[in-house]
Length: 408
Image (cartoon, rainbow, N blue to C red; front, side):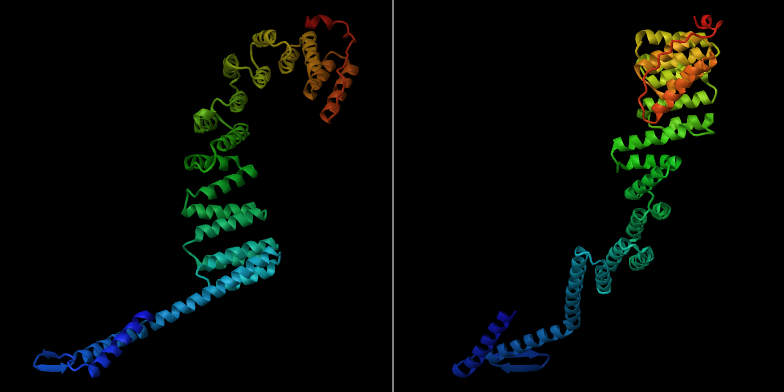
């Protein structure tokens, strides 16, 4: 612009000089509504220049308030930037109070004051002052009503990191009231419910999280299995509740071994032992599961001889399975087949010492009147349960007269 003005001034000076130097400096006549204006060409050029300069000056005067405001804004932004830089430097140096003070002072002249107050809230919590943290969060909410979601999420993060899960859950639920499918809020609330053992609440959130795909499928499956294991094992679960839970479970998880066991255990508690017996035998045909075999042994069936027969058939294929040996021994105890029971339980202990097996053995010894071996079995089971490694007992004593033939 300065160059243009210089050119115009040179032209104007040239026009004026030409007016005096040239003999024929031109003639201009302008007629308008009966008026006539006569002048030379250099004078016309000079007048055009004057008009141009006047218009430019008027435009500058018109824009002066806006230009002054923009200049003041730039100066204010520079001051705010300097305060922010100083505040961040103070934080890097570990001067939390100074950093908090500088950031909040810069909020007054910032275009995004809520961000400053959110940063100050984090710093206040780092200093252990939750009351000041909450006051900064409130100021941030007042400054930015449209960004309330981000403020609530930050509040929940700070409350959670401060150990106040209940307050964090309330903040997240408030956020979800306005935006029910907020991925991060759902993830955080699901984590809180899992950590606090609220399995029903976790199960309610998992379908939405699965649709949003904000978590990996493997993690969602892990959380689902964990939640359903607890829900299926809950006291007071009735037939309707069991069916509802199983139908709500994703199809690909209905074959999970752990969940299949939990469902069968729930059915057994509801008195459907006969159905569970059939289901366990069907499942074990497709793949062996020692825990299902143990559950099979726990079933109270009317035909216990058939139950024992199936267990012994499985033992012929897996004679060295300590879980199966113990399960078969327990059924023999219920049928008062003392000799078989003792043989199976001791064989299980010979393969793998286990506190539960020692307890069964101790109870068995008491039933046949051998209190000494029973005491030894209970002692070794107790020692093993506390990290010891007892030797497998060598039980040579004969049972009292009249009991040896009962288990043959």
